[in-house]
Image 1 (cartoon, one colour):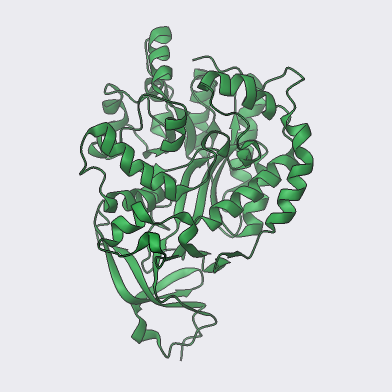
Image 2 (image 1 turned 30 degrees about the vertical axis):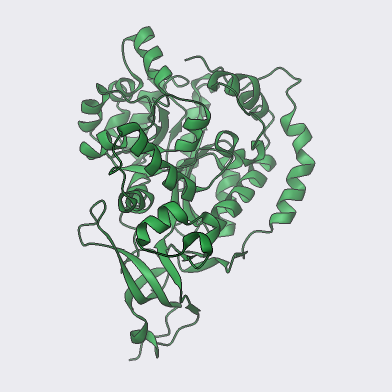
Length: 453
């Protein structure tokens, strides 16, 4: 019996591929290739000539473009795009206590929904096909994800100051939305950080994670001050706290980790669960933090490091492409070694390492048979990307997120030739603008939490 037509055939592109072992830096490119998609999955990567007569419901001519696995934003707070540019040129403590946490006390579910919608539009246009979000009112974010077609790893954040109901709400959200949006939503428990969630709550979270088979997404050792303060006050680092409370016996995604010390490395290495770190270098530079995520040391002990942007309130951008370039440059600067990271290594962190960091290493992060069809088409014909001597270097250091022409998730085209197909941006911006005066008011004197590290 003849097969029914493929859902989508992309022809004439150059495809980024990994070797069979998917090792870091083991990236190659196949020219004049074709990608066949069926039921949201990559069926084959073959030659353009091989699919000339293949029946397909839809065909994309991608001559002159490069097909890459979609980028993954491994740690962000999507709705915080509503606060973009509100808290500028401030030290971390003032940023939290004087601006962000007072404003967040005003948040409504509608604010979160509109912020998430605008963030998803920005990420889709920037070639992001999946994001890991850690915020409040996450039912609204899940609804936006389901509607706009992107993939997401979501967690309802909580502080111990909320009492037991904060933790309970995080668990209820994770269980209710796990596998949602036709499988595009995965979930995690989301305690905020060791400095806002006490040991009892962290231990209870670890137990709940094990009981329900859920991962944990948490900020820890975000910066060196947090590590030093924790040592001075308690005699342990934030990473030690994750170990003694059992969090490291779960699958855990640690946001930032620029304060990870040498003494923390053996602790992370003996973790009982899958441990990963998300790095968002633009924000660290903006806050003038003296250290960055120690990628080389983490690589040496087998800890995957995914790329992230953090929220746009601190980073001003949800551009993972920029995070990829900055990660490579900052690592060269901090290690004093121009050979680390290479462009191929940076691409590996942006794709497979990021997929592993959010627990999706078997599903996305590579364009290969059996993987979900999450991919982007990038146009390198602009003057800023020509000529091409080293395609990997061109992608990392010359190309921009605006060079992404088409974004596809689960085989569905979300952006075609720079046109967003699932989100009405002007309508979102207009409605959000009407709500901003009430959102940014700080005259009430409230804040949702105190930053004291």
